[in-house]
Length: 165
Image (cartoon, rainbow, N blue to C red):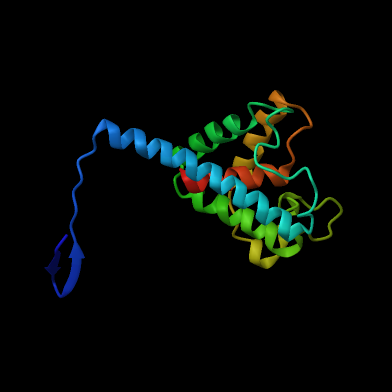
């Protein structure tokens, strides 16, 4: 594609017709990207929390204990991102801030119970958003599979899906 000059800057113009075959390929690529991001998120979570050698951390971990978990998370995250597209980046940032301090333990979701500050109250976390979205998805998961999906894993799955979406 040849660049077009426009007011002193170079811009590229490209128009690609969308055909059904391309749309199908893009959906397949999105699913593959989602699977890759899940693996990377879980590996990152394992490394940051110091439990990389534990046998339970792997892709598809909840397939037997809660077979619909990843589908529930994806559908709810899609609804959330569709309603407020800027929350996609916020969910990724929420996951990052959770993992940065002492590993991916969902401690960024905890509210103060006795007046002592929590990770959620820290100055770098003051502008975090998406807590209500995480609570909404957690409620759906608890109805489907009570006491099965950890909040740390939920943050990783939602961040993955938000990036894909």
